[in-house]
Length: 456
Image (cartoon, rainbow, N blue to C red; front, side):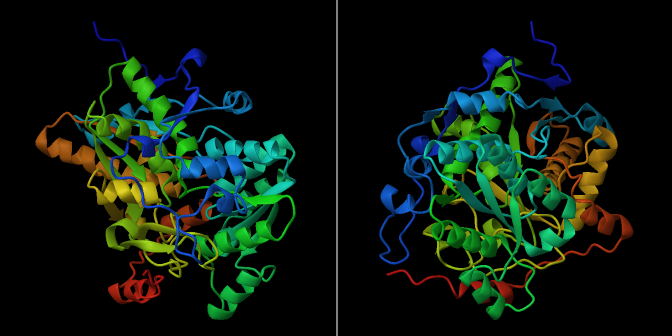
């Protein structure tokens, strides 16, 4: 007899994952290696350890271990806000009049307001274990900086955050949460670093990008004794930590015999998307099950749908290793009128390889349609979603409406990465009718891609 599925599915403490999952171990085609930009040779753990914590450098290059034990101190921290619920969107289904079943994995039930805390506590933990004084990082919309400031406060580490300037100005409350937890927050690009001054000289008046902020944070880490740099997305180590999302979602689905047909995630650098889909992708790669995976990105920063699969710098200042990824060029800076987050110029190498292999599809959507979907969701499900999450909501609604037309009883799962209560300037623009859609021209993208590093 089938089980009655509750509105919200929570795992018991005994059912919580005790290990992270590394999808690279099951990938037949491994992501191309990170390269030292000086030698163009694959980076070593030793080289990465000058920038990252040693244990994180090892995780970054690990292609063989499918499962990595989660240290007990991190498990104890997770218990403060995990398990995160898998929610059946009954009200949204009713409003859409669709035969589709819609589920979302809600990651916003913590003070940082997003999934970013899953990796922030892990990276802060390894920094503390290494005996470091503190860490530096970048943040775009602010979720990652908020999460890291919380993790560093918990572990008594110094936290220095370079926040994309337009977000710094538009989201003062997000900034003040970071400062309340003890973080030092600097708008990027700034005149406090050499690379920041260089970017300001090349792009006067720029509102910044994630690539700019990464460059500044890396420089700050390498010029201070006892500091390392940590990153909130893109890297495989982050996808490993974020796999807790997909592992919990998969366990909840299995518990109630729920079999998703389509799994949808917003895509900026790849942390949420990779974390949600990785365990399900593992089953697909091993031939145990099949799923459709959809990555949803903004039309204003369309790395998967309009970028080039090539080696590029992970940062605008060109101080980080080279990664082979779908990219718009490290110098690409999204328009300041784009308020929907997901502003990174490239995509995780792991996600890029899966996409290039045809295991993931991608769609890009306009931000006005994203906020319209966010409003529709908020009205019936009672949660004001983050703009980033709302990209996934938009496509989940699209898929559900297709089912209405065809009568197909598809099961849809999407990632609700966090809440949008610090994004009210963007919501105000949408409500006032002043929000516009920016779509870069082919010429703009070509100009940026022309500056890709030359590979021999």
